[in-house]
Length: 380
Image (cartoon, rainbow, N blue to C red):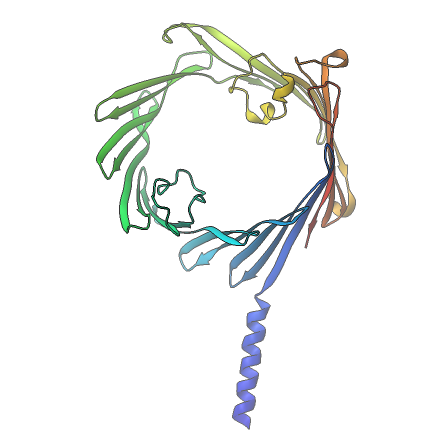
């Protein structure tokens, strides 16, 4: 009887200790749009933590029900860091893809291994190595092994397209190699099943003056050689005034004729996180302007200019509310004073774990569409 009682106590102790390491947390984010049409999107994240591993379920919802499902895991197993994902299609129910990644870093030596598995048409990591498989198989595998001892990195890939595992390619990379005069370059050698593919030298930046420089890239193939020269302009940044542009070159691309100004921005902090920002781009809008600015412009309206005001303040339970208001100007059928849209958004914490979100677009020009959405983020 005493032995049975001791075993019961031990089992209860082990069970309680194991349960005490379990933690569940998550968040629920939803958005309801009333204009231009009524839509509902929602994401539910549930993270289950046990023995140092985070296992997360990410479920997407729409008006018709579940629209996406993904499971992730991340943690440390001894000296190895591991992570992975599994994707499913809710309706009709189907498995899509999965991956697992593990890495080990010690004493300047980094070793990694990745395994991808996917069904036809569901490769999620770049170019599908089995896209030409005829007839399509049930599922495919790819194995990637990497090793790094600075400045050298070696990556080798194998693919199994239902015909057995075969060598795919080998990439040897060297980063930050000193050339001279402070100029550095990167080198990559690529081998495929057919043999030597190419040698590419990149990262060579030749400075001239006034923030103007040239990036030089050279590629040697078996039957060809190519040289790419890309002019760059570092821009002018002083306080809250920023200018973007690039060097002007001749028709042959090897004569420097001047500096092209692509756009500028003025940003002034008024108090704490309150600010005023004015942005103007010269058309056609160049990619020298950061995407953080370009993404605010609507191509259909040929927008090139905006004024933005940002406000913030103390919210509930130690949180902080934020409000952003923006007026934009464009060139396609502009409205009053050339204005195309009024855009606004607000995030207001109602509780320490509950935030209300509001987004709207008020069109002034016919090229823009009205939009009004509200939603929330609930964390637990």
